[in-house]
Length: 202
Image (cartoon, rainbow, N blue to C red; front, side, top):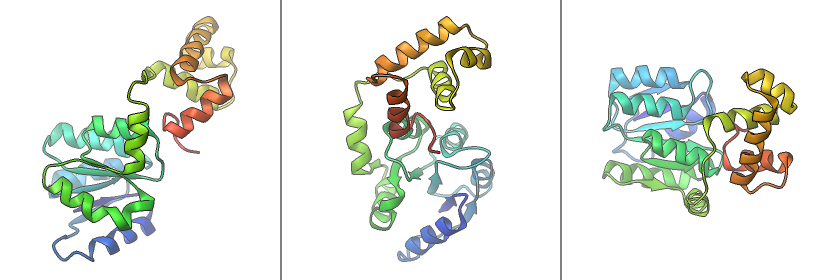
């Protein structure tokens, strides 16, 4: 088992849960996605427990990198946030399970057993969010960039300057974003984007 999290207390907590099962063994730890890729390459753990929000390389990018090199890797992603977009990104990247940190003590061992048996495991709250937005059209990479800039307090003109596009193009992207998110205005869109995990938590 490889534990990947930038917070020492979280790694300690995960280790404490794992130690309750004598069949599980921790073979290594990493503090960010870059380290996770290197340590996985060296140790080839059976299971990886991967946080999403980390410096240098986040958990989704690390999951994608590991699975590209090791297609049979079994990665369990965990996070504080229920957002369906973040979960979908992790699963598309190759994660076999998605857990909320609040449920790790009660669900982690079950998730490990399911993933070890070749099955997926998705936290119930996250599964509901995924089902609710299954029909939703995803934001494009450019639309994500636009809403990130807007969330930072930039005007359409400033967003255009930052991204190297015209103000009219920004306005078109904003219109598309509002439609895809079912938002009433820019502020509403930002709130939805944070809730669904399109925008990284502050």
